[in-house]
Structure formats: C-alpha cells, structure tokens
Length: 113
Image 1 (tube, rainbow, N blue to C red):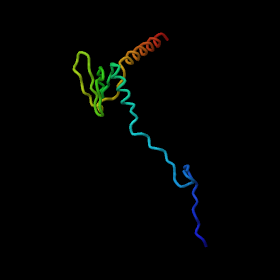
Image 2 (cartoon, rainbow, N blue to C red):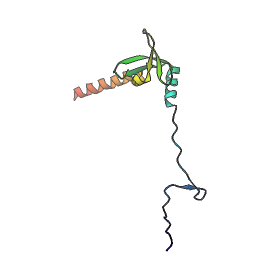
Image 3 (cartoon, rainbow, N blue to C red):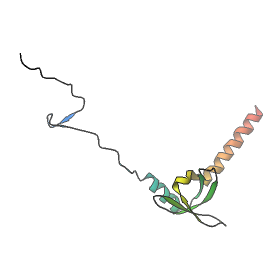
Image 4 (spheres, rainbow, N blue to C red):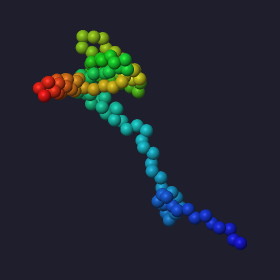
C-alpha cells in the first residue's frame, strides 16, 4: 500500500508558480500624522487647549515638541513643558467657542419646544 499525500487548498496567492507565498507588508510603525499636526499648529501659532488627565485645561501655543513632551507658551503666564503621558487630548481653542455656541443653540431650542 502506498503512502497518501496530504493535499491542502492554497489560502494565499503564490508567487512564481507556487514557489513563495506573498504576504502583506506590515503597516508602518509611524505615520507621521502627529508630527504633521504639531508642525501645522506651530507654524500657524494656533491657540490650543490641552486637557490633562486630571481634567485641568491649559491654553497656549505649542512652541516645540518631542517624543515625550510638548512646550506650551501661555499668554500672561509662564511657559510649560508638559509630558505627553499627562495629556488626555488637545484641540484648537477656536473649536471650543464653536462647541459652546452649538450647545447654547441646542439648549435654547429645547426650551422653546
């Protein structure tokens, strides 16, 4: 009796007539999106709101950043170096005003109904 050969269906496309298996490339480790965002805000001197993990809000312009920290220049207050692990999120100060206006408009509309 002859030994049977196990035949498995191919699940991935092959290269060069079945010699090698083509695999997807791993995604890049760094997309540079964070770098692009910081550089854009620094160049425009955009006032930013930084919300810390303890819910404290700091307002100022980003002067520089590195892998672990951001330097924030504040108006009429000393500049701060903030470690990134203490930041919950950040956004433009102009978006803060917009969100307050829409919240006021919604609450006024709710009162009218």
